[in-house]
Image: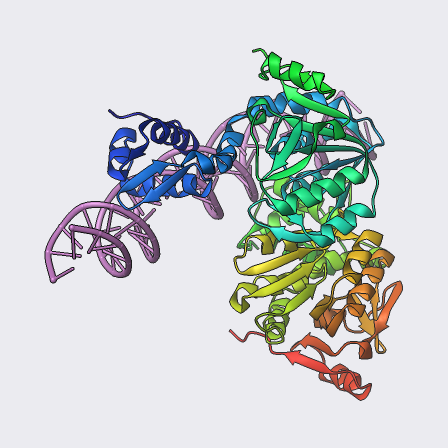
Length: 262
Length: 262
DNA sequence: CATAGATAACACTAAGCTTTGTTAAACCTA
DNA sequence: TAGGTTTAACAAAGCTTAGTGTTATCTATG
């Protein structure tokens, strides 16, 4: 059976699904199934392995044991595009011209960046290289970059220099994201990032957490903060109503961003 | 007479030269001379005008009056490619594996950046966005970005946050550049940049000034520092011998980087 | 040590972007 | 308004890059 993926990305998603269903497959088998060469399969698998979705061994690949499922979020992140766009549209309404907005290094906040030229004048503060490059091109947006040590895996600047730079500033709004939340707590798997996010929270007047619904109910190695520490928590319309209700009972100020309905 | 420029950039350089020689030319004349359409000439002239090299008027272009000559540096910068490459090659010998190297926001130091992967492991400290993007891709090079307010004209980060970040660090070597030097002093036209460069000099053990010979003998609005404040000054082989001699008499430690001879 | 599996190196292809020219419309200036 | 000059919009050509396959080399495992 030969499928015809529209693109490399698409095919990788299918391969990942396939592996997760089957549990374990050989490379040549995948080459057959998806109608590409073994070499291409290997390249796809290398990439999926880097993302922590699968595990390679001699003779094939297997799904990651669920204990490492955490990193799988990286893969999930790529898929939750519509959710993030919805959240970004909603978060935009919290920003007004003239404000100083702090944005952390997450794909969700990156979505927000694309909407900023509509709200000029504006000051953007970030430690995310990709966002720096994005915003540097936008006229009318003043950009304050947070320095620090560059981490290729996150494409952002972290560490002591970054935290000190944050402490010297004061933002009107912080838009931040995290990798998991449950039982009223936000989590993140990286210590370095937790420290930076906490510093950001200390330096912002209003703290907004952006979170697509796939992150609800999970945990990660490090606690970041109780959800009640945020002035607002924005989730997308895909969030289960009972989860939203439960959060509100914990006095978390949850906003639900409606998904585009087209 | 029809020339055949190898590329768009090359042709623009020739057009600029032509205009500077002639003083004033018509667009159709240029189209003839360079064997391209009038439309293309207009596009080239628009670009050169943006760079402050020429001035457009109905019917043709003229050279910029020398009062605006300063911005012309932008154009000069593009042309001294070979000189900068020579200087970069020379400067590379001053860097050894394991060092922390600080690089400022100049096209000369950018040339050095391309040579860094050969000297790993290495730590690079910079406030230049273009360099950040360049170095972020290089494996084996640790990158410390200096934050600050983004200045589109320089494509770099400046201001108080940047200076504070510099003061918290200590580099083994500083490679810096400036826009002019004469009578034993280095000059730069931008106050913000002068402050940052001075901070960098305070935070480095060895201070190296990189300067292509086109900058010798000029001045600019602000004094940066006496040349004797630098441990080394590297110029390219195009520097007039008597100028080099004069600098040495002032106890400036001048190195002459030989130009590629091919 | 033999063999299947994995990687590295090179070449080919397709897609996207840049550059250029053409044509048509807009704009001055006499 | 008639002459040119400039700009805008579209199309063609060229270049660059990402993606893929082939072949050859390397590596692990029985």
